[in-house]
Length: 180
Image (cartoon, rainbow, N blue to C red):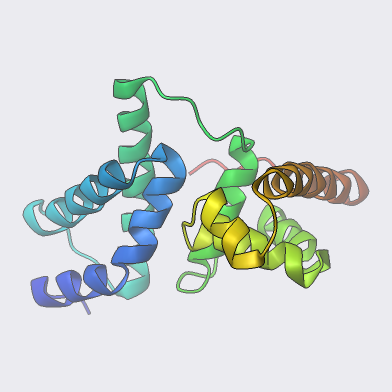
């Protein structure tokens, strides 16, 4: 059953923080992330689009927010956070998996790698990337110095990359993104 305009708006508003956070992961600008969310909502309501359920709408919204973020970066010529784009994509997919359950060898590798991390490392990643806190806020929340947070995040990026690469090597599978 196709979602009504009211259901589309209600679903988007319920996911507003998550969609804005996904945009923020791309642009690292709070105001731009909010603008991106608003653009996503306007597109969902003003274009001739229909969604066959909440999952389809949210999947479309996250993809659209990501594309809007890329466009914003191109217009503003900003650098990304230094997180490998492939890892950022996996983290965003993992975050979205609370609503939309993507599958595949790459997603499974990330899940396994994330599960193998110590609880405190998973908490740090969730605070930083999923909850959208900046490093200073994460440091305060965890009671750790700012420089230690930067070092831990850097080590976690490398650890996740190596873990995912190792799973690809052991499985013999190509974990590159599948073509749409």
